[in-house]
Image (cartoon, rainbow, N blue to C red; front, top):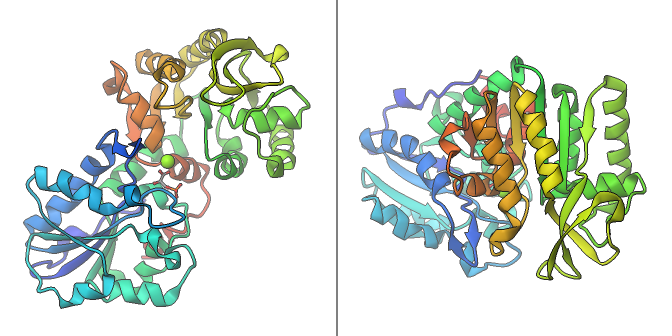
Length: 389
Ligand code: 3PG
Ligand code: MG
């Protein structure tokens, strides 16, 4: 277990670089919930109470250009509404010219607007390090990524000047129960987008669980690998060999993996008319976007027998609420079950927060891919700088 050490630092009149995951879910450019913002406040408040000054940094989305809707400037009004003294600083190099003002937050522009963040650039790490005396990583959602501010930057600070934050500690603690000694049967319900990232993670988590429920969109790469009809659904053809390997491994280890028996589909495009179809009769011109009602009932029965349920499975589209109904039904079943339940990921939590009983979920996690990666027990680049201490 890794613990925070930063509460012992003398932070008065010092700058603390705080890497957060403020990658808020956006619907048509508008923030749909502030879960990730609220989650970082315990760390922010601890620093500010000790008269420290914060250099706050995050990514938002996966920008190709400097898209205005992905600018961190959009987060400033939220912090001001909560009463924080916050200033947006677009130029990293100008930070050192600012006088240190205790209890002030200087918010950097979206780190991924600079290609160096993704390029493992050691000069960029040094440039960021010059802005602060201490480093805190509280960006749980990116511990499995190789972003420079998460992997290289911490090493620019001596061991006694780098720490994880309170959110990270809370996440790791909540997930340790699932990672080390889960009550069984342990079910993982996996779906949603980012299939290129998620399928390799299924490969690593497979041995930890008893039952895998594979859902849209990622189930379609597995089904295509099996030669089943998937119409025009999202498939990553580069993943088919890995999908076969995962299924072979599951069979050898006695792990069940279940596919939906029916689907909610849209015809011709994701905005097309909706329908429910059975799995064997998947139409050529249909795109699978969620599970159908028979599958909801079947998966509810699985949830009711489980002792542990992990969910990273945001199906449907936020701008078409009727496509998210069955995701909500599964979350409701989890909320009503006696199992230990975890819902992980920005989009999955966004849907959960729209349900009536989400308070009954044991843990809402700010990271989806990160939680999957952590549970599987693989070494994570974002945690390595703290594990060695
Ligand atoms: C997320 O939303 O999953 C995290 O913020 C990480 O984002 P990424 O998958 O683009 O690295
Ligand atoms: Mg996400």
